Length: 142
Image (cartoon, rainbow, N blue to C red; front, side):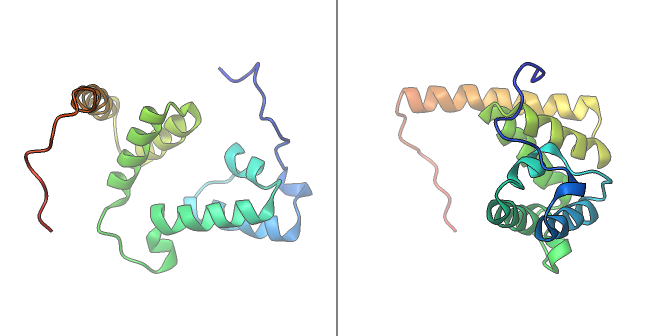
């Protein structure tokens, strides 16, 4: 899909990265349990401040255990939310990335299909509710 549309900036190779970027890359690999640096992070490495801040924010939210935090949501739920939002936002890169993460967490095609059915349903019903400007009749009371 993207073969004719390369990234707008170069992807930084780990071997050519600055020491600061290499440290972030090492943390990404260790935290995610992968042996490569995904293209997203290699693009952000063109601006080390952006790479570092984005990685720390993602790590804090998606991998809180790696930061000594406890989350109210398990890893599978966090990835389901990520893939649902990515599908809604039309980000093929993120849909693929988070679908792969879900597969590693044991999610099969039937479950992914159910997730996408819910995404499609709520994109439709949200558009109807918003289009008709329907006043909420149930509100949470936290």
